[in-house]
Image 1 (cartoon, one colour):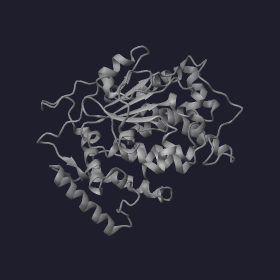
Image 2 (cartoon, rainbow, N blue to C red; image 1 turned 90 degrees about the vertical axis):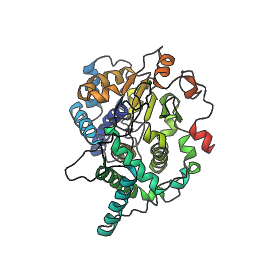
Image 3 (spheres, rainbow, N blue to C red; image 1 turned 30 degrees about the horizontal axis):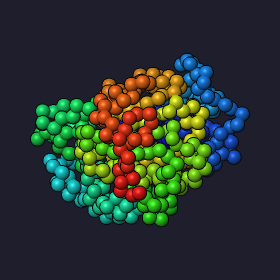
Image 4 (cartoon, rainbow, N blue to C red; image 1 turned 180 degrees about the horizontal axis):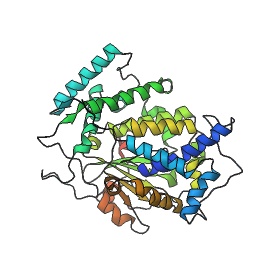
Length: 382
């Protein structure tokens, strides 16, 4: 999986992908036969996690892969620091959503008049989801509000599930529209950078064959939060490596819009449940070509209006447990509280606490009890 939604959302997978991208980049710099469509796999190196039982072995493995642990941790810290955006001096604020939307539209108009920015959103797959430009703007406005939401306000709108839900701002708090505009600008720049990959309209039909290689499902839980299920055990790794960069990019752009244009994801929150399926270190590190991984990483971490209430990790391989224990030193208390580690044998019990039980889980997801026969994607598009 690429560096999916670092910090609040799948930040752990983001971190492990920092590993992958850094060592692949180092390999690419040394070997001009490694291009954008290659996984850059040096056949003479075989790094697995069968015998990886210590912190030293884990850290040392990166030298065998063309990079260093210090480089990896430095890249990770930079990703975490830039993932959520910041309030800045001189930012403009609104008291309510309608006012914020009007202010953001003015900012777009002024930007178009004073620069070469294209605010047509022509490459955004709005038709595929029955959405408008206003829906995109509202997604970014709500993203800018998430850090100000209260975890347990006395507003009668509570959720007993792990992670809780987003809550409206209090009467004394305001919406940082400038922060939303900065993130929206990053989104527009990135979409323009891959515009050649998006010339064909981005629809479910156009990415269906690519999506079938991955095991990605979407539902809502008992508290109406959007849940993204990722199952690496059912992802076809061989076929994944045969995809063109364009195919992979298009699929992730479509999925990202499906997630962030979901109003319940914006207002209630997003939960990610990832079954790592005890995946091997080397298999994980060589899943995507370097340029695709770097490009999609940036899109999902620094561009989209996505943040999570909870990230659930199941069936973690030994190397991942070692990695998390090291990286936890650099995580804030808030980030740690948004990660749920599910131990083997406790899957069904924890899913009740995380999602509300089997009726919110796809029937074919992992070895967890689930009753959903058709997830949101299947219901809408299949």
